[in-house]
Image (tube, rainbow, N blue to C red; front, side):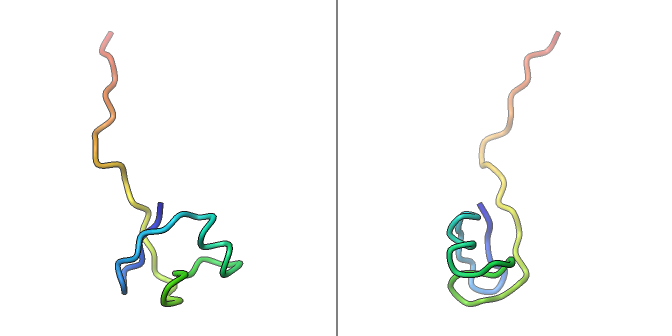
Length: 47
């Protein structure tokens, strides 16, 4: 999942590649994106 820093639109890599071959927002065409992290933390079992 990626998020555009201009319009805030959240989209997948497949959706982005459907409209453009390089990294751009499918809604506004802005090139500065950030990768969205999962909201829940990863739990690792201790040894």
